[in-house]
Length: 303
Image 1 (cartoon, one colour):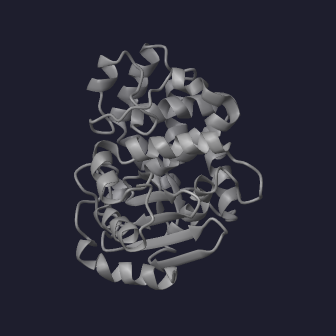
Image 2: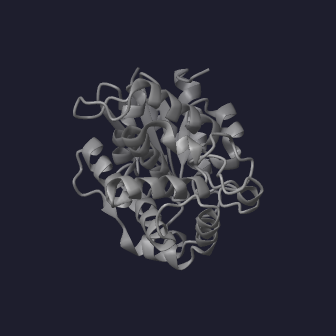
């Protein structure tokens, strides 16, 4: 298969969707991003890299970071995190307070904000610096030592992060945080504000397409842990649109409100797409359309 030509065709095919939706203007720095951009990258299990469009433009990865924080916690601490976070789709917005209260402070899954705050809290306990741990994993898997937090975005997010602060305080009131709320929120904002390109993200995600095998030939995760992260990505990775994205795309994936999405074709490749315009559930409109095109044209899907 000529993947490079396919990606260039997909850039053309999704042109009508680029600019559709709304940028995440509730985070002021993200609200200033030009929505008329689109990039796509594919990294094969063997490490071959293919990119098209704006694949080398850095953007804020936001909730995509949750996958890597969870991977680090599972690698270091096994299944203990599942006593504090469920693994079920939420069916509610990613920052819902109502569901958290009705379920006594146990978040529905690790990819909604409340669940990710609990995972970050555990990673902070395990490493002493959760944001740096995620950053260092990204640097290791991409080979790009320049991957770092955009502190303007982190500051912008913290300044308007009243809902996340409410979630964190409620978690703490239920005994589901180990560290001070402010430390957890700072770590969470810093990891979400990592600035990366499509190519970086596809490289960073490759271990999930390779049974957990990292760029240096050692295991980031065991094959069983890799399977489980991919499963939770499929059912919970695109917020309350996970069913619709699974229907259209047919791959495990994780989105972020910066407009990025990563997806995994097990044993074949990792994919990253980016376009800042978001649909109602917080997923990139053009990004989902591109992944739909990719799996439809290649037949690469888990179904």
